[in-house]
Amino acid sequence: MLERQGRVEAALDCLLPGVEHAPARLHSAMRYAVLGGGKRVRPLLAYAAGELVAAKPGHLDLVASSLELIHAYSLVHDDLPCMDNDRMRRGKPTVHVEYDEATALLVGDSLHSLAFQALTDNALVADATRQLAMAATLARAAGSSGMAGGQAIDLQSVGKRLSLPELEFMHVHKTGALIRASVQLGAMCADSLGAIDLELLDRFGKLAGLGFQLVDDVLDAESSTATLGKTVGKDAMDNKPTYVTAVGVERSRKLASELCEEALAVLEQFPRGGERLGDLTRFIFHREF
Image (cartoon, rainbow, N blue to C red):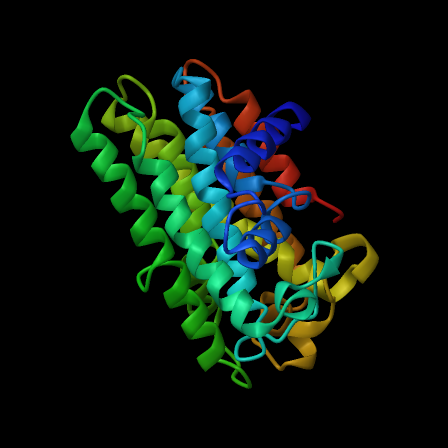
C-alpha cells in the first residue's frame, strides 16, 4: 500500500500545475486539495486490479491519478456550503475555508478536467477504442448516472427515512460508482482481458463500493474527528439517511461483514489469484472498525 500510495502521489505531483504558473492561487489550491492526504483507496484498487491482469505500472499510474483527481474534485464540491458545508477534510481546513468558495468551485472544475486529460493524453492501451471506452467509463461514474446523481439523491433525502433498497440505490451511485470504475479501469489497462474476468471484477467493484459507504456510515456514528480527519456525527446533525439510521449500528456491521465475504468469494474465482485485491477488501471493510 505504501509503495502504491507513493507512486500515485508522485504521479499527481507531476500532473498538477505548479504554483509558478498562472493562475498561481488556483494552482496552489488544486495542490492543497489533492496532495498529502487521503487513503488513496480508488488508486489502490486500480493498481490491484491492473496487477491481476498484468497491466503496465506506468499506465496504471495515470489511471490511478485520474481516479483520485475525480475523487478530490468531488470532495471539494461536496464540502461547499451549498452542499454538505464541511469545514474539515483529511485533517485540515476544507478548500473553501482555507481559500474561498469561488476558488473551491474552480478547483473542482479544474481537477475534473485534469482527470480526463490524464486519461487521454497518452496511449494507455494498444486499442484506441478501448481507451475511449475507459474515458467513457470514468465519465459515467462521475456524472448524473453515477457519483453526481447519487449526491443529488443524498441532498434530496435529507430528513427522510429511506428503506434499505433506497439506501443501496443512492450509495451504489454516490460512492460505489467511482470505486466500481476504479476496478474496471485498472483491469482495462491490460493488453488483453476476457469478458468473464471483467464481469467478475465489475461484480467485485460493486460490492466493494457499497461496503465502503456502509462502513463510512458506521464510522461517522462511532469514530472520532481526530481518527477520520473530518467532522464525525455530521450525518446525524444534518438529518441525513444512513445505514445506521435505517437499521442501527450492529445490523450495519453485520451487513458489512456479509458484503465483505461476498466480495472475497468473487475474487476466489480468479485462477491467477486476487490476493492484493483481497487484502484491500479487508482494509476497506475493517478500517478502524
